[in-house]
Structures are given as C-alpha cells and as structure tokens.
Image (tube, rainbow, N blue to C red; front, side, top):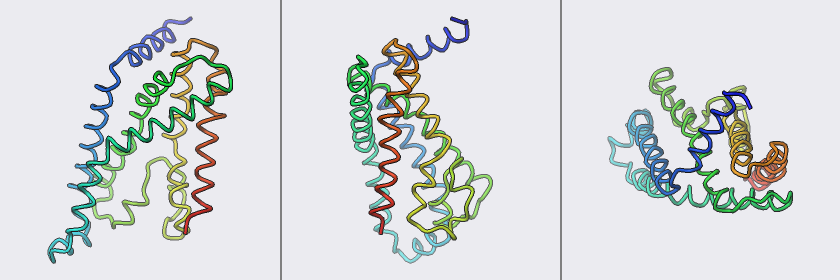
Length: 215
C-alpha cells in the first residue's frame, strides 16, 4: 500500500471514529448557518420580496422560513435513516457484513459534501449574479445538468431531476463506496456493487417516480 493511500485510509478511519451525534450536531449547525446566510443576503434582497415586505405581506414566508430552520435535524434524520436502510439491503444482498449503525455514520459523514454546493450557490448570488429573481435562485444548482439548459424553456417537471444529477451527487456515490470499503475492510469492487445496485439504483428509480407523479 502506498504512503498516500495509507494516509487516506487513516483519514477515513479517523472520520469513522468520531461521535456520530457530535458530528450530526455540527452538520445541522453548518446547514443552519448556510440557510441563514442565503435567506439574509440573497432571498431578502429579491425585488419581489422587498416589495411584499414593504406591504407587510411576508408573514407566510416568515413562517415557512422558521419551519425550514426547525426541520433541518428532522430532514437529516429521515434522509440518513432511509439511505442507510437502502445501503443495508445492498450489503445484505452481497453478504457484506456491516451494521446498520456503521452505515448510518457513513451516510452522515458523506452528507458533508452537500454543504459545498450550498456554499457555492450562496457565493454565486452574492458575488456574481447579485440581482437574481426568485426563480433564478430556485432553479440554480452548481455543476448540475440544469446548467446546460435555460430553465425558463424547460418543463418544470424536469427542474428537480436536472438539478439532482450533478457532480456532487456523483461524488457522493464514490465517497459512500470508499467509506463502506474502509469500514468493512473488504474488496473495493464489492463496495461498488453494493452502492450502485442499491443507492444509485434507488436514486434513479426515485427520479423516474417523481417524473411520473409530477403534476
């Protein structure tokens, strides 16, 4: 094993050794701060919202914002639980001995990656496109397929799938593979089979379901 590879293994082991609830709390705090910055410095400056604020018509939006903040830990708990279960089923199918608890921590750590697109999106609208519309903000997702299209010309049912397929999501798959490989200490090829036959398959099935039921 090369020195660089051994170093990566040590980093991964250190991450997997952290206390899950401490890490969960830090992730929630980071997400809360990014959401606060986005709402304070981007959404609050959208012209339509400024007009509504002046007319005292922003009450419902303030309620929705409060619910978004409060729902952060609940959303993460739900997402990690479902994703871990899907991966656990994949492990079971391939006879890969790894506990649900280990998978939950792997999913938790891997989720950190998705702070980057939120950070990039915030930076983009604060520094580059400083006068966006509400729909500009809603349709934008860094390094996604949506960037290749004019969202105004795309059927709205395709907005979510085109944003969901992005470089960060794909990178997430490989992080899951690597951490499962490290955690179970088995062949890397098995970890690829598990992730791509369970989580990745479920991901595309979900997008297909979304397109079918969208109205």
